[in-house]
Image (tube, rainbow, N blue to C red):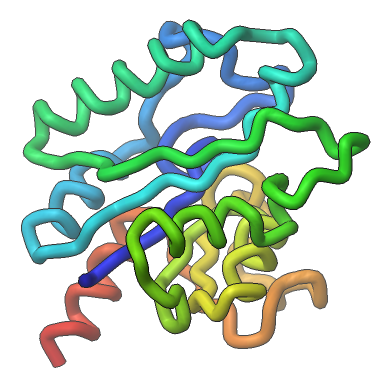
Length: 184
């Protein structure tokens, strides 16, 4: 199975320091949904792993989170794409849970659900913690220069990023890279 694990906020959709709290605030980044559709059409299954501490902070509830994801699914379907599953951590950093990135719990859950070892599975995010979590289970780290990483373009990555992190302008550039690598 060809599997790719994506962060949500700042990778697929616009991010906000005040959190994305409603479907009205959930807006895809340019080209991101089409990138997922291109991956799907090439046989890749796409899964989302996302910290959603706004739930634990009481900024939104599960109904709102589900409505945001329903909007994402609808918009993806309109461009011929889909996300196979969404895994999220509702906890804040003070709870020190195993599912909050940079801990690997969400990735372990994904491996269990899909019955596969995640060694070499590409994971894409806009922060070091997104990639650190994936690397702990053997994922291949890919940084997109959107969201939290928007200001990193053209500079060396800080030491907090895993060794071997590959950098892409955005999710569309990552999808192009992955499909070209696969074709080679």
